[in-house]
Length: 229
Image 1: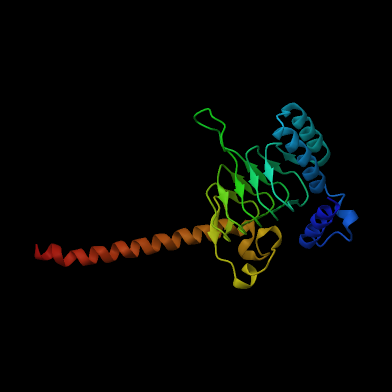
Image 2 (image 1 turned 90 degrees about the vertical axis):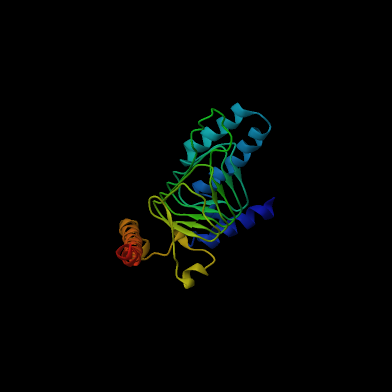
């Protein structure tokens, strides 16, 4: 157990250059929230739902991080800072990183049956600050979600999503090959939340221009046929 704790602390240090020692990492609210969740999840699995909720509320009070006891979380999960909400049926793989103010939220079932309502995150997923991942969708392994993005559809493996609603964007090969990218996307103007909407609008204009050009070509092709008729 001690070896697993050391390995976990080292995995956090590999993703966060701020701490000078493992002892410092032990003060992180995300580390404490995960520790409380392990206890709450064990109680939840034993059908001790009330006790699981008590542990959950204590953790939320102390860390400002709300992880439902029913959520399933893999190894080396790291919440950098706090104010994160993770729903009951969320499933999180290994080596996942989430930054502050992220929500793994659920959808309201229309048929009255709870079921799977929250996202599934593959191994190595990174979610930037302020992002909202909603519904029973799947984020493929090593996928990344940029800051303030809203994801409501499945994300392919290795994809980088930005914007509202989130859309896949191309990433420079030098950035894509990096093992870990803080906040999920490179820190450049292209991925600045203030310019993401403009980039999306540019893409939409380009698509409309292509569509208009195609329609114009079809119309020109049909004109000689009409003259003969």
